[in-house]
Image 1 (spheres, rainbow, N blue to C red):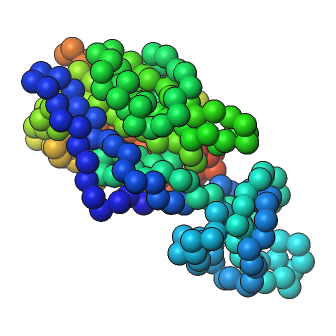
Image 2: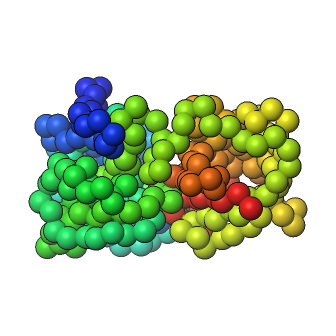
Length: 301
């Protein structure tokens, strides 16, 4: 959920700018956590047939700090689906059939990702009480290409707010209480190293080395493009075909299909003459294989 008001750091000539700022604090719900129940102070509870309805009830209730939705039939076959709204969240447990979400207490305007953590090469990390300070540290550090700021108490009640600076960004994964920003050129295109908005694929057939879920999975992808903008292909060993492949404005997107469908998107980057895909995210089938790590990146072979 993003605020409508947009903020942009003013770049110096030849410098990088971060499309990120922290305006007045607001409360937004972080990503849903499957197989998770919240502990704390119950505000109310009632029957609710879908998790989306329960989530919306919490989002629209200023006294609600988090919710837990329990799937119908979780304890007994005749049990209705239940929605629990909490006015205070003190902990978590991991029972089956439960879905939960917790409100964060900061806002992220356009260009910044709330509830998202960056993956890549860590430059440094340290305590930082505000996201604006973490942002400024990255803006003023020529080696920093992205940052993640973690709200205090995200994992444990006494945890301090932390600032992570990255020298290279290779992906992202959903994470509650996290706020991230990636450097872009002053023209507003590209990431570390610069990505021209008109960058396209080479014409012909070639391979990418693909990595997903914080590099837990890796395969070769074969790509064929006749015009540099549209492409088809497939994953090695029959692990899915590639359809609806396009490159627009430095963004690459495609569907992976093999009796099920996944959608992939990322940023095309020319890194010193080597073509890469960075900051990748995916959705669709088999998200349970790597929850909160739905990231990917690739390098042309």
